[in-house]
Picture (spheres, rainbow, N blue to C red):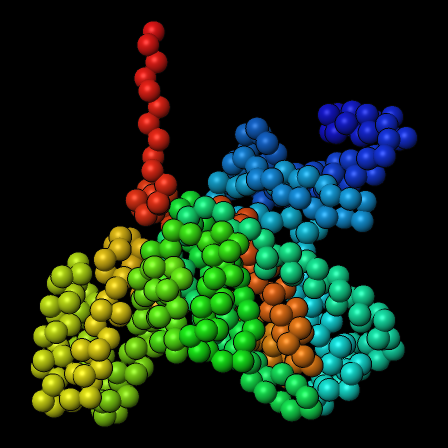
Length: 399
């Protein structure tokens, strides 16, 4: 406490400085974080205490944008679990975006009855168009900066997925595709790399989206995981020169459609024997054996397996430690669930900009949460072999 008082006294003596307010905010934030982590650990730094349940493990840097300017924070890390300061409010941005979209729909008279009821319940009936415009502009600026930021380093794994939203356009309700890209870099860290809104999933649409990622710096892609979207496989080959992994979960749904209801469990286990193999060669052999056995009794299933073998088993050629996360788009399903939960509140978006505003804000927050997680999504030791950057050996020093 004496050290804290000395630091505070030193700040007060600098009262005429331009950065005084920022420094005061930074000082208060550091004290709050120290108190929060002390509560989580059950003891102060360096204190020997039987009630201690955790330990600090260094810091991570993060800029905090306030009305007084940007404050540089050093957020404590914990040896077990993760810590995120309560005053940063990790979910605030998405809530503001959702509010903005609801208000915009209400103001322009294109909202549904459920949205109208929500506006009244939240006491937002008196909101003006200029107030909505200012809120939208504030959010759009941050979302656009996030979605257009440079992409640095190598990204060997990339997950792509599409979801659909209803949007009003020219007094009609249309369905638009929202494409999301999530990647893992050679540090084993996961990030949201981009999103876009389009009217179809034809090859030109995918090509343009992947090229936009490449222009921002995406490189080093080895495997792209997605469902069998129209034109995507050709776009991946054309733009990224990467291998395509067809989502195993979606493939199994297609495969089981060729089996009778009473046979689906057996067929699922039958095909699953290929996934249980230890390497690509054994998996491919088992796959062909299953297809050959099914050929006479279920010819359509055998034909589907013949066509999909290379794409469904592509992940087997990558490190065994990664395969559970590579064979499908399941790793980004929780993110899709959050997007659906928030977008269901709106129902029908007033325009495509509103879609980008809300989904972009959700993705920004998810990316922030991933960035403060202590553990890597994949370990450095297992993912280092996938880097395109050659290791540099320094010459030994002559003593």
